[in-house]
Length: 465
Image 1 (cartoon, rainbow, N blue to C red):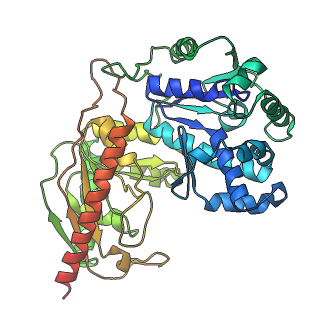
Image 2 (cartoon, one colour; image 1 turned 135 degrees about the horizontal axis):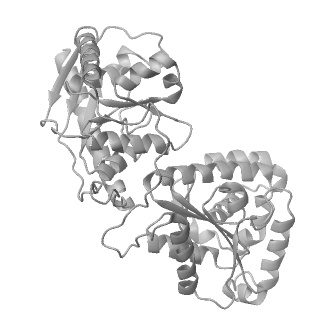
Image 3 (tube, rainbow, N blue to C red; image 1 turned 30 degrees about the horizontal axis):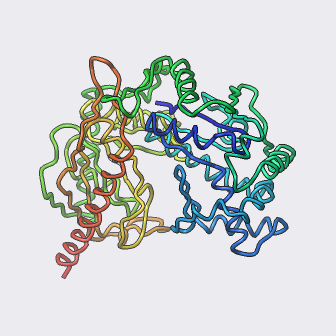
């Protein structure tokens, strides 16, 4: 499911943030203010005594400052600095720093990563700023360009004043890199004598027209997703497994389980029975052999996501598909992989997702990706957390081959969705997944994985004494 992207550009004080906030609240879609990110960059420069002539140093400082934007809030290295972004010093400096290619390149990467990440867990996103429709999201489904009378804009921003706003507009419009201009396919809205409710109604009508079906609002009891025409079928599309495929998986799995037990010394413990239906298996990830280790947890066929490039080899790709593999493009938010994963769960098969995203090191489980929780909520299935210990010593990061050793795996009780969002078979549409539910389930999974990892580590120590 491709997220619907709304790109809002416009002059300072034209109401971009107000409208973006209203759309976000009405549709429960996340929104990003790129202008706040540039203000944060200017604040970083001021805090470190850097001027426009220190562009390279500022870009490096920005990358180390961990700028995180969410709606109206900005944090730098975990500290909320939102209240400092409208100061007179920042107001006067932001346009100068925003014109620097090094700064724009640094922030552009963060902005696009934000859009990709939110597009996976939401039906739509709202992005507002000064080059959204032309640079950040040039393929946005709806582009808006807001303008208003200069006097009115000055009244909306009394801390800056009309002359300051006009000066900023001129600087931003005349800069060589990403100037302030309306995209050719943008809808221009004059907000001078219009309130936000009127503008919101007009924008909602545009969204409904372009999506083809009315979008449910936050107040609607059941949110629905807009049906999208089916993509052209490929060999990767999800279908029920054939008998020979299940037999082949059983043979491969038997061999792998034998290697796990003899060569990797695997011992297994389950705190609760695995669900008999579909579920998301969410193991900790410390070694390349974790994928093999997890196969021992059940005789059922497990679906795995794998690097897309591997599937492009004709014979190998067909073999992996037969085993239940799902190709994943790791360089972007692969929405096809997300769709196929949901469909795999809906066919009744378990799906393996490593919520840490990649191999990690250390004793702490943190910064989980939200994909496991999102897919579980989307399909209305539980998540089973799994702790694994010892594999990081069997095949260390950078090692060419695994060495014999001992390992231990423990699965915890399933974490069930608080509210089912399973797709309706009668309508063919699914309820939207609330962001709060994804965050809450991810936090619960994080705590369980930490507990299980510590238990697995302790069990392994006791067994090797």
